[in-house]
Amino acid sequence: MRNKIFVVRGVKVMLDSDLAEIYGYEVRSLNQQVKRNISRFPDDFMFQLTREEFDFVKSQIVISRNVNYFQGQEGGVRKLPFVFTEQGVYMLSTVLHSRFIRF
Image (cartoon, rainbow, N blue to C red):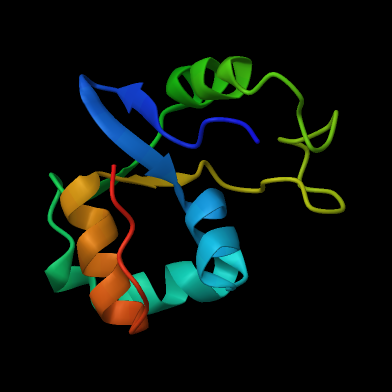
């Protein structure tokens, strides 16, 4: 199992896709729940990666799930992913009514 915690902008974060997998959601559904509760997710709880940050995180994943991960085809990503800080993961857990994940 690969590490699902990355350091971006000097803080530990987790990708929305990894959190969706952990919580048993589709990424799209998880992000919809976040958008419905956006006031609970200030910038220090979550943010969207830049292309450069995404490339850095992707390079940290030893085995990519899909060679064309960013292409938007068959499980690829159409938009840059969101990442959640430790506080954001706790808030996400509250929003999704699920268990907590500890860093």
